[in-house]
Length: 329
Ligand SMILES: [Zn+2]
Image (cartoon, rainbow, N blue to C red; front, side):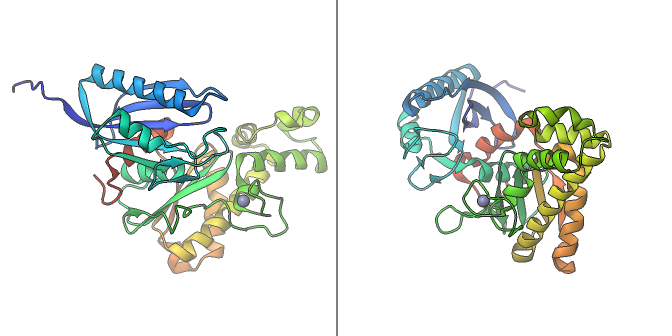
């Protein structure tokens, strides 16, 4: 077989995060060929970050001897997809109506640029190459510092009227619950995110006492307690941690039941904490979904952990490149 010198068609993925950014080159089949990352740098002007990312991308393209057929940019929302603008995401101070799309179109003439919020982009990647493969209707939730998500409906990423669809963390599951960062009370995020789990564990340490828990050492330094500590203690069978995770999982399942009643998905993919906690969170979530959704809808819906792990962010950017949000490539 002759070895061809013809450049391989690939996609360029750019992930813009609050602490770091990454550039990667991947194939339409979801294989990452090369990647680099840089610190975003708090307070750096967006233009400087974008310029550095473009230089990094050019270097990767030269090294790999490839020609990108599309560029995908995954970034925290809100954003204006049509106009390629990043609109002041909380994790990127100073990125106010930043024309990321226009910048990259100028830097790489003739290559289409697609911009997508990171949760939607990750939903697309999990659907193409991860835990949602083969589903026609899939909901993705990321259970981390916040709860975000994306909807794959009828084999397409669903955006809604103005890119606001898929905010699965911000609907009420606990009317008397804590205030949410978004300003509403009792959102799913306020009772089932990482900080919510840490806060619930702290409250239990105060009210239930700390005699029989391995988390007792946190009593004098509650601010240090994280969801990760709670999950770790839960895996070791710590009763306080198991109870806190059970409650968070139950709220998660109630939230999922609401989504299942309305959207009737085949699979709900849950990322981040659910991946580490496994059945400590997903067990109660499955029970709560079964209790709060109609059997016919709940019966065909699986709740599964996300599958892409630390490849998710790169693949998210690759998934949206070339703007073929429809049928799987
Ligand atoms: Zn909220």
